[in-house]
Structure formats: structure tokens, C-alpha cells
Image 1: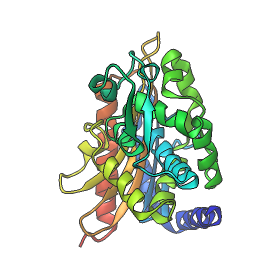
Image 2: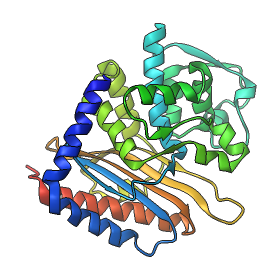
Image 3: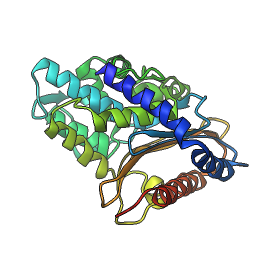
Amino acid sequence: MKLEVWRTFLLLCFSWVAFGAQAQDLGEQLKQKISGKAATVGVAVIFNGSELVTVNNMYRYPMMSTFKFHQALSVMEYINRKGESLETEILVKPSDLKGNTHSPMRDANPTGNFLMTIGDLLKYSLIESDNNACDVLFKHIGGPKFTEKYVHELGISDVSITQTEDMMHQNIDNAMLNWTKPSAAVLLLETFLQNELCSKSQKLFIQKAMTDTNTGSDKLKAGLPEKVLLAHRTGSSDRNEFGIKLGDNDMGFVVLPNGQYYTIAVFVMNSQESDKANARLIADISKIVYNYFCQRYKRD
């Protein structure tokens, strides 16, 4: 599996040379869009599984809840290794239901001591961005380090996952310890799409959950026509004592009706802009990339 990832990476590097001036043109459009913003913005896009474009890829961006995609892949690895399934039930204790965090699962089951399948926990985590569900899954698989190790074993090194959602809520600075480079985010998306990391039904499960994501409708999705499919995972931090938002992110893959696709990740770091301005910037970047894709590739 790792060999296949690096073959893909070498293909990307080769294609970058062939992509040449056209990629630079897109890069310039993106640089102009983020110019003057009171934030650091990183973008990575892979077109048709082979052509990589990045902007500000040298920085480490806090992932926030985008790492729930990484976690989902590692959960599939864990349950397949342990002989479990998406129907395996886990006891959710009252102590698992942290109060000061986003958790529709807790709101629906406030007393705790209930059984929930791994599949339903993943739905809460991927679709609702439920922080308690995410941490219950971390506890089941052995912590965030299991997810980090799994991603590294796939050959993707520019990512660190050491903190649970609860750890990040206890100290906002801990969010900086879960980081990625934009290129690593899209490479993981490509690895998921192009390789058999799990069974077909498990892969479809993750794809469906990401398509049904109900957070961040004003980010990547807002820059796309209605008929275009987006499967994505968003992430957003609180603001620190200085009013700075550590991370405001969206990553996923865009599929046109004819089956052509691209993967995209936009990470906004240390932003002094408003939440609305951050979302609008991500949407504008999404629109620029989509229009560029449509101009470069046939759509029929």
C-alpha cells in the first residue's frame, strides 16, 4: 500500500513539471485572492488524481475537525484488524458526554449508559462533527496516536494527530498539535479514493457520510453549482484570548456529473478575519478552482 502511495506521489511530482505555466496561472489567481487577508491561507488541489497545485504549503496548519476523516479511515483499519464491524456496539458512559462541546449525540442521549454502533458513532462524527462521538471512537481504537500511525504507514508524513477533541477544548493551544500540510490532506483523500484501504461497503459508507456533512455549507460547497457533488469534512476552532481564530478549514473531493473529480483542501490559520469572511474566502477559492477545472478539462 505504501509503495502505491509513493508511486502516486512521484506521478504528482512529474505531472507538476508538465502542468507548468497553467498551474502557475491558477496559483497566481489563488495568491491574489488571499492577498491582504489577516490570516495565513494554505491551499492544495489534485486534478484527476495526477496534477498537484499548492499555495503556502510550507506551513503546518491546525486540522481541527478535518482530522475526523483521518480517524474514520483508521477506525476501518482497526475494526477490520480486530474482526469487528460497523454494527459492533460500544457502551457510551456518562463520563464520555462532555458538556462544553458540540455534541448532538449527547443532546439526544443526555444521561449516558447507552449502546451505540461504531457505524452510528462515525455518522455522528463525520456528518454532525460530534466531538464526543469522535472521542468515544478514539478511546475504542487506542487514542489519536493510532490514527497518526496509520496515516504515516500510508506514506503520508506531513501530519500529526496527538490530541483528542476534549484535549483541545481543555486548552485551545493544543489544537496546534494536530496539524497537516495541505498537500498531505489531499494526498490522503487521493489515497482513499484510488486504493482499497477498506471494503467497498466501508468506502461507500465514508463517502456517503462526507457527502451528507451538514457543517460548513458556506465554505467549499458555497463555491460550487448545485449539481456538483461535494464530499467533505470541515473544521473550525474557537478564538483565543486575542480574538484570533486558530483554524477554519474545509477539505474534500468534488465530482462532476461526468465522473471527473478533484481533491481540494483549504486551511485558514491564525485569522483575524470574521468567521463569515473566512467562510467566504474558502468559498471564493472553491469557485476559482472549480472554474479553472472546467476550463482545463472537458466536462462532457
